[in-house]
Length: 469
Ligand SMILES: [Zn+2]
Image (tube, rainbow, N blue to C red):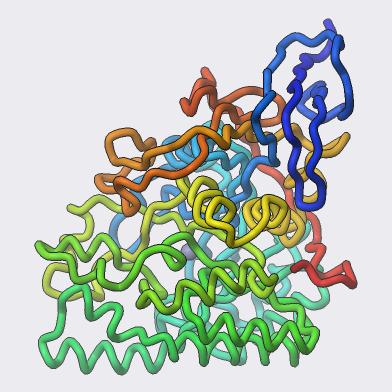
């Protein structure tokens, strides 16, 4: 018996660089040929005429099934990856978290166990480092060998997640040699801690004070410091969940100087404002995340950064919780578990607010939602590309359709939708993961989860002399 073949017929194929109409022949999960293939026999035929076909989305920032602040994120690798799939994302990169004092590789094994046999889409991992004495530095090299090449470090949350600048710098120096990639959460942890203590002492303990005690300058300062440390260490840097206009400006200046700095932002920093934290009845707690939502004047600088190439990617930082889980912070905003859902809506929101509203081209949309993350995290050209030999991870998208976002229809396991009621231009008709249609007419249709672990190669950001923009 031959390998299963699929023919995607007559779609407008859009990649980071190309835009043309052609047929795609898939065999054994990979793209075998692209061209005028009318009449070619295949086990399955998908009519994509009138549709746009782009590479499956890659969400470079998700947290599934993760213990946080005494509770657990409400989406696991089952519900969270099905939500990703219906939203046009075929690969996620989740974060394994190092247990304090332990070798980070032991926690990585736990994340493998959580995901295996459960994931509806493919997945890779970043490793969060919470504790890095010199004796553990060699373990970073071991992670690269195991296909986990990106290490996330925190400049915020002293005594919990934060590494001091010395440890961050040493991790950067080590990573400059082992082919890994450093990711930074940029906020000034000590300054924020002082503001938080003052706020609680005054009795200002409602959710809105989460935002008030994490000013954008605390992020801008850490962004600039992080870039400087990476520049000194001679290592490329990826800044996660950028939320402020000042940080976007720091990126533009760094890249102007030729620094290999990259940044992602998230849909909620592009579209939601800090007003949400003031919602009555403690509902504001549903919008507590770090960095916090900002006033609206931060939105356009972030959009402009994405369009201009100062920011390269959009991840969701997907970290949903039920309202009840947030209640633990009723009298103290610092106890509210941090995070917003987003994994299901990223691609659709970026198409609507990015492409349909004229902020950037379809090609740039593909770069931002897929190709750049694939390149930066060592998954390209297997992922993020439509070319012979690449995995057949495809989204068949109907630009004439529309999609209403609502709690009533979402797959995400959570009791609210931050984008409730938004009607987006375009609708996802089908999603293929390695050639299999896992979503049809917007619904998840796979009979069993078929996602698997994808190893990250050494980052292209290190080996390539051209800057990913
Ligand atoms: Zn995160």
